[in-house]
Length: 192
Image 1 (tube, rainbow, N blue to C red):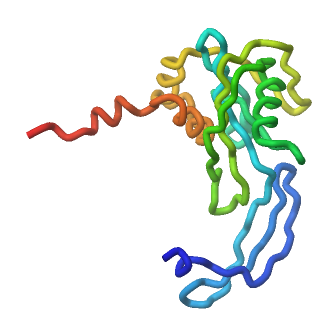
Image 2 (cartoon, rainbow, N blue to C red):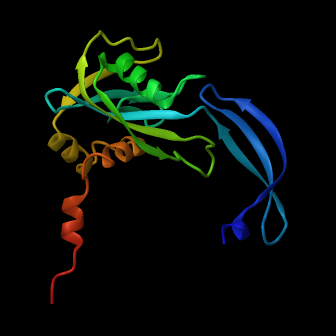
């Protein structure tokens, strides 16, 4: 079935480097008409984000200014997977660098495609439980984050209120907490 939907690449050319992405322009043949279209692909290393739960059961969250939206967001720790690094190692490293929290027990939750229309990479989700403050944060020169410890109820309320809007943060949190239960319950039809 999906073979009938597949476009075939007939050519490709590199584009500009955009700091976090390399651009590529692929010439893709339409599966029905045969017409060739040029499509932009943003190439990147894989990303990670994590739900980190401390020994008191609080989630380690971060606030940071995001240049795309132009305001400070509330989200989960995360970042890019370095060359030769596993996604687990990257998740642990990013948590430690951004928040100073580490240790604990880690479990892989799966991966999502950040935007498969134009991105070629995955964002891996991790759950770290029993993490503790073990060092001072070591944020990069281009980062400035604030750590916030929140209960599961506070995180759910922040998501439902629209305070957490980062799609990848919602995705990883949604693998751990039931963010939308009140909405599913409210949408159920009345019994007859």
